[in-house]
Length: 125
Image 1 (spheres, one colour):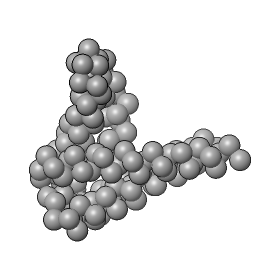
Image 2 (tube, one colour; image 1 turned 45 degrees about the horizontal axis):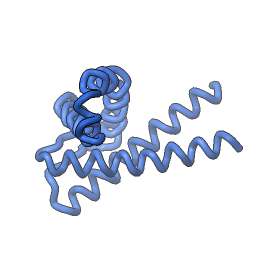
Image 3 (cartoon, helix red, strand yellow; image 1 turned 60 degrees about the vertical axis):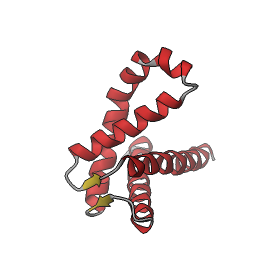
């Protein structure tokens, strides 16, 4: 197995664990969010990665003028919308409120960025 494939698999599992932790934190805060199991987290991360690769760039390009006017807040709304759509597509992952979707999007962005930065640092060494 090549190093690139190992890195992708490691990133995938790391993001699935992040999603599981974010859902657990959301449940502890009594938010309407649920994830049935680890394999549902893996599937959700896969569908989210596909959506971020295909749909999100198209939406950001079409909404670029409005995003500039809103000082980037519309880009955040696109992230929340993509996450909400993914929750509708994956049967084991449910988001029941806008607040839960916002919480999940913020936490996934922050924690995912930290993990991606860490993995990039490890790769450079």
